[in-house]
Image (cartoon, rainbow, N blue to C red):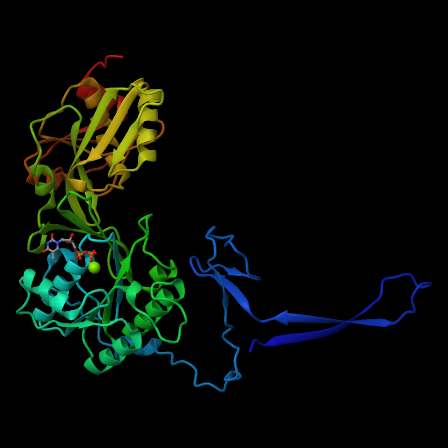
Length: 485
Ligand code: TYD
Ligand code: MG
């Protein structure tokens, strides 16, 4: 039963005295204590609307039961309240010990191992290898002496066992279950008390007191809430697998990402065997950290030296190919950037990008055109990050500009050259972070020369021959000499 607050107040009539007697009029104002909120972004609304004003999503606004509603409502002071233990924290609680699973790439992305009582959400396209990765990780944790349970709502126990055999994990003491009723799962976990539980996937789990299908917004939100609360209360680390939408975001309400401690995305290009596990949120470690894996016939293998791998297929120096010394999280990574520039037969020349931001490509093309007089009009431009990598660092700007000009001119840059630097709209080069780590990685892989922004102070060059340039114009003059129009 909804509850209502009834406010009664009186007001003198404003009508003319000669028409109506001067009597007080009584108005009844009924105020509903119900509220509405968006299940995607969490914005609250005074009344129901078909479309959330805050995030623009349709049909996402739902009625919320007020916390103080219902027959069991107690007045303030009648409940036992919550315990405040701030001063105890230093004395009583032991520091949280991270558990390493032995898969270095996974441990690194988690910020140095799995934190007890944490909740982790792993998202990724279907078939990218989430179940494979997490079954391998759970098995490794079990082998390392931790109690680990893998719960699948998608596969039967026999199918999980078959996959474990294929991954050569049959000897691991990992426990597996095929179940999707959350009440049953939590009851089992409460008696088993594992260190780690994997729930594959959150969209297949359901709670019986919610009247909607598994995977619906209210089910996903309730399942995530139950599991994260359970993780905190019982000290169990919970890894949730989440499906992604067409747009590449984790399906279901966005607030699930707020509820958990860590959000990881497992990504990779179709047709490439490399998979990248990327931390986009991490309360216990650096975000943007990546782990690189390779999908093989017998599961995922870690790639401990990804730079060597991304460059291993590199052919002889070719026009349009430039090596970018990047950093992903805390790890330096050398990545090949490829560009192709060709005369266009279309009215609107084509701009195609794989692995980089297309808006950023337009910006670099505009800077090259207006600041350096290098025009790409009437030319199709293709840009590709080799190996299925995706770069979001602005430090790759200079390498992209170098690849574009090299492709346009048909001249190749020396094979032992790396570049990095962010390009500003004025054509100047902005300093970037962790230059020393980038140079060290380049030296390790046999590179000798580097171009870097001149305003940067370098503590060490790691034996690399670093040429500092003020702006893109100076870089072009240094590398390509006078350009043909
Ligand atoms: P899976 O882990 O089921 O993906 P997800 O859970 O993200 O949907 O991975 C399925 C894909 O991985 C499938 O296309 C086959 C491939 N695969 C291998 O190449 N080698 C293997 O050893 C395994 C187990 C899967
Ligand atoms: Mg799966």
